Image 1 (cartoon, helix red, strand yellow):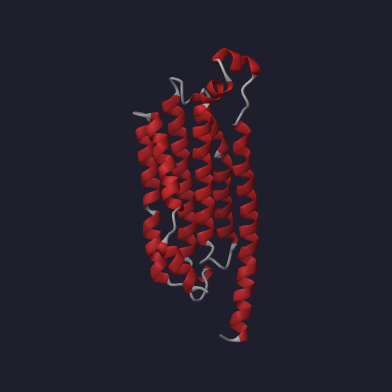
Image 2 (spheres, helix red, strand yellow):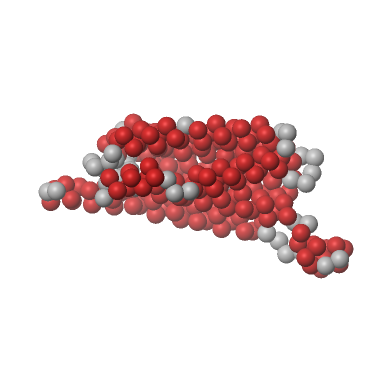
Length: 219
């Protein structure tokens, strides 16, 4: 590789490095805010329920919602990192789409709190549907960011394997569909709808052979 090519690649890495650093900071704040919903039972609540463990167990929807929100943000961070293993350059549109995704991530604590507060009420279906619905939007935002970069291949490293890019684009199509299923299930069984969202978050965070191969192609 020539010195000119090396300097070009270095500039690309520095350009997207700022985007990744800013995104990491926003995501870190969003995932930290989730813990604010965890609460210590009051003495009155402990006495009312006959012990500290019993009082803590009454807040199980809060813990479940926290885990759902945590895994949702975690999978976004993991896949954001994976995306930028291929994306090395940036333009205004890419930064706007990345900002749109960050907007979606920063809102996650709100539907998470809805689930925590209303999972044991008659409004559980609506709360979980809102949570799943926001997950659909997040999946769409993610697709928009990736597909824009994939369509404008000049944003990729010169060594990027475009066959892998097309395959990953195909995989991403299923994200909004799966979360839409969780949304519909929420109206039948709120708990199951929430568990589907959590399961999808865990699934999408698992090691991905295509991304690993894509990363090797640009090294």
